[in-house]
View 1 (tube, rainbow, N blue to C red):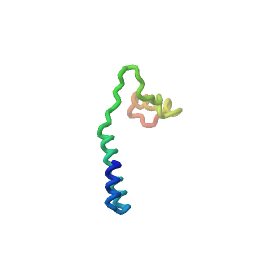
View 2 (cartoon, rainbow, N blue to C red):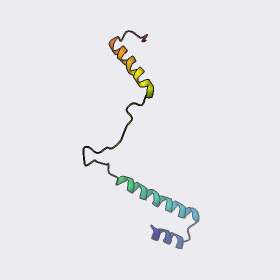
View 3 (cartoon, rainbow, N blue to C red):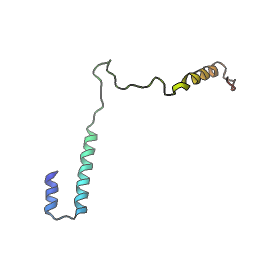
View 4 (cartoon, rainbow, N blue to C red):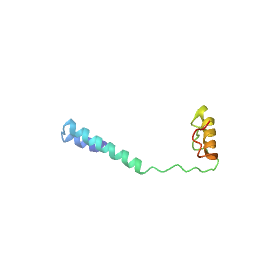
Length: 81
């Protein structure tokens, strides 16, 4: 990469041309890095990959769970208590 930029500098390219070349090379370098990426595969079944919260609803989770249970037992009762 350095030799290409050095050659471009010797050719007296305008600054915009050098920026375009360096931006293109940088984009190519990043694209190749992304293309070579591999997914993480745990080696042990006990290995924790991600920890999630038990409920994203916070304190309202219990009330919502109770309303869903009431709706499942009586689906025609739309005025739940």
